[in-house]
Length: 594
Image (tube, rainbow, N blue to C red; front, top):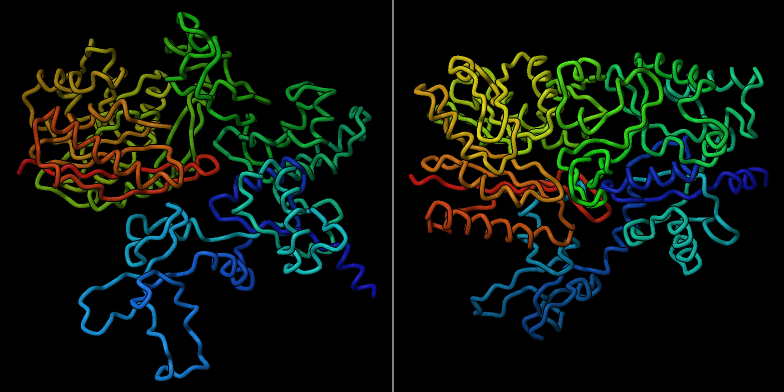
């Protein structure tokens, strides 16, 4: 009886979610202080997979029934108790005797929301199938109400459904109701006690909070244990900066503390110093999303309304420094026209992915660790990894600090006919400086070409040796800028055929498609890599739209009419950008004239 009571006390809910929604759900649970930190997030077990498969049986595999002339659920005719020779009905999918017509089996495609030819269903986007369908169990501290949850099967009943709806609504996850299932989770014996210290950040946080609490300086009705328990697990270390997640202080215990004292107050400064030292950092900040719109401080000279000004420099204006000297606060002048002194006074941080360093000033430019999937793919693309008849070049029309440009250049390392140079266009002077510093840290030469219309061009010898030509200008005039540089050079080392054009702007890079078409080498052809944010159900239609639009641009800009040769070679799912929205890269192959 005691064991049964213990089980009831520790029986909690686990949320079974698609792998691509784990980050969203985990963040929601952390914000509500309902994530069970004493248990791990694990792949769904085979037992749970069976139940999930039963749920998916609402969309069975369909086969064509030649007698009724309709597609039917073939499982309805699979009766093991009836010998095949006694069956009064021809098995669905079997062709009528003498018939030459073949009818394919149909399988339900959850992305398109319709039945499709099962033999072709997975072909367009094979790498994404596992990512979409793999499911993970996220343990929570949410208890079951009486009569619900003694077993996972109870959760299928009506009262279990209401319970699930309530949970997801409270977590602001109701939009994922159809994707999330509830399961039975037995918490560890110590789950009701404060979670174990699992990281140096949590350990240092506990020590620092306890120290000021014992000194009587923590004048709030919140214990250090509650604050540590409510602090999220995740953080990013970009030396010398420790970057905390956006929800680090959104839980009730932290809101209570911060209602009495500011994050960067003298009272909390010793805590952040201790936390920074625990991971080898000297600075601490809180991450905030990159806004699509910036406030008036970003473009003070513009006549447009502050709320309508587009953040074309992609500046992280909401980054919150907590500890350490991040340099002077950004101003309209330092953001758009920084001096050498501004660069020297700012904090610069670095990260290394795939053996490639990237450098940026976190107050002025952004960095996305989640793009590593696409960076890795670039290094291994057959069209990038295979040599051609001559060395080639790539173009990045939204280069930033070299997010993808560095991967294109590294792919050509130590290869005679690989990618020898990357031409970059970038408006943000802080990103250009970050690209220059990152290239230098990787041992690459970088030549900066400033101003629309190319007001200053480096010497020909400098251009020949440079791994990167960086145009600090709008990409709207990229073709003219590039042509101007080439016009002043007679060296074949400067005139490399462009085989790849990267368009890494979200939510859409459509304004630069025309420029991309004109940048590709017309004789040899090449690839345009289009980055877009797309609804999961709209990927196929967006793919057709991109293919048709680029074909039309080729006809108008170059005068070519061989539409059939253009091919959407691949669609890559990089990451979930938002619920139901995927960051995709569409690889469009444009063949050469010959």
